[in-house]
Amino acid sequence: MRELWASSDFIYRFHRHAPKLPASDIDLQRILNHEMSSLVSETRAIHWIVRDHQGTPWGLLSLNEISIVHRRGEVLLGIKPGGPSGIAAAAVFILFQFYFQLMQFNKLVSLIHLDNARSLKFAMHLGFVKEGLLRRHVHDPRTGQFVDMVQLGLLKEDAFHFGNQRLMQRLLRN
Image (cartoon, rainbow, N blue to C red):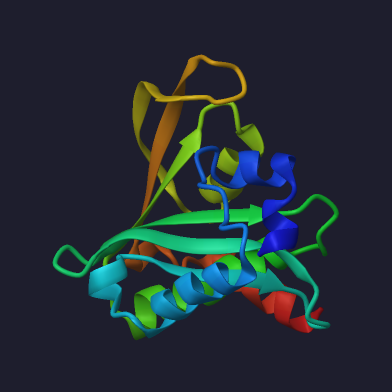
């Protein structure tokens, strides 16, 4: 966590308004232990560190704003530059299995800054559909400007479309 959070460029791409981590490792461990032992209905979030097969951390994957009643949540994914090919897609496909099949949720949403063309393209390639433009929705801490966000959504029945199944198979072979 500290390694990933220490990169201002990574955090900016992952979550521009992410809070700073506690200075103390003991305090950070207490927070992480609390989240791990709490019910999803209490924390409304689940977080994972994305690692390669050797255990090297490459990014973070989070489900936030989880609504048990509405069976939906918001996904955030950030991968460090230079990450292994396919690691972002593999993390998302594992999330799809967990989220749609195990948890039986209905919809996954993603709010992406309009200036993040790479993330928009990636999400839409995986089947997310543009549902709306949120004009000047958030304040950008680097530029001091209010910036637009795009709301994307993915329904359970669309998560496992043919293109995603084919990509999953290709990732499994590699």
